[in-house]
Image 1: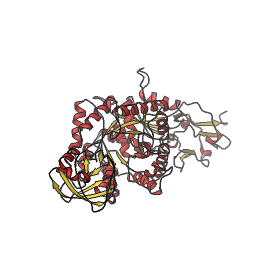
Image 2: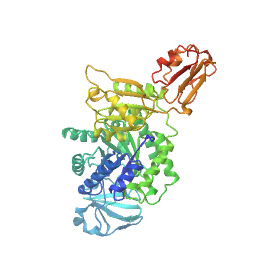
Image 3: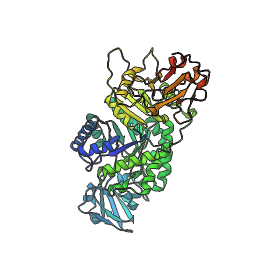
Image 4: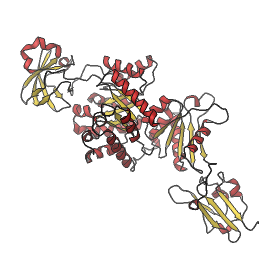
Length: 562
């Protein structure tokens, strides 16, 4: 997988069939989002079943994210849409109060949120339908609130209501959320997203419940309230993943502040090693059009350059006309943006007291300095791969695990290609040897490739043992020598030196052994070993370089000895 940042895709009526899900997976989605604000448990269960089947059919596992609704404040059912006009005076209150205030029946906006009047105050701003309509409160009258329309429009049933700068008393984790969470756990979802988080205690409440239920499911905290922005450091400290939910955030704090908030949160998450998802309206125009706007393409690219771990599609894939095309476009934009990689933070700013973190960073640096083909990170919990992701390794990382749940969870980790592996308990081959054999079978490595192998968490890190890190040189793959992969030089009339560059591991043993400077490191990007043809005539034919070559890449044919 050449793309490092991951794609989260919302599944809905446009994309919940097995056929379309297969296309989405092959187009590049890594995480499938189920929005619990819409639909029924029966419908969601069918969608989850279809996602798992599509994954099985394609051979690529994706994680399932159960996105809880949270205390969404909405307009209740209306007999017909309401036409709100600038300067008009209306009242708003819980639906049940309409019977008590019949004098306002032609100017009554019903809401499902019963504490709206209690929470609001005179002068408070009230926004409808993602801020398309705006009013302000003039006074309270018992259980209703008098408002005056500032920006009008057509108000329909179930449209959202936002109360910026109002301390909403509703808990972030509602009774409906609890029911949806239990449903998700029964269906083995991989991530839980908590909406309208305001403080660290909101996450802790859900963590306590998960602990009580003996479930270890990561929590994604959605940042969309001004209070959450203010408390972002304490939230990042206790959550597993952050989602920058820019839709409601823009309504609550103002769209002009969202770009700077996004950059600040991504930087904070990168610094603390917490994965972060940038979400909402990234390719919004592709809901109805086959191509995005240039501004949308720039938006996705800027999120990548800021350092986001994942980008998300919402309505584009849930209800849009071009769900597969939207994923392909998103993937293309990300790939292009990643050609200009973000500068990696200096090591001195990273917390290396954690043993796993130190090991993964060391593995990344060794892989880069030795031009390794792969990093194999063997993990039971996924923690070591999360640390590797945090460091933003320049080399491809294969997250090897024997847990299908951990494999799915790692699909959200930046730069990690999850790999499910069933270890053979034959007592002869180690898990590393078995993995190398699999890579050979799948033709993902060639002779001479270097693999940096590390493991340490879970059962691979026990008392009395230590974490390990080693470099393995791939060899013994049958191959035909091709002239394009042969570097050759004459030894005067005494023979010639042959270096098969397809087998050479660039271990530089020959460089260290030879006193005549016959071998040297090429100046190309991969720094392969080559023959200095001008110095080849000095060869003493002692064969020491051939005998010490670990891959058999060197051969000296001597006419002098024969």
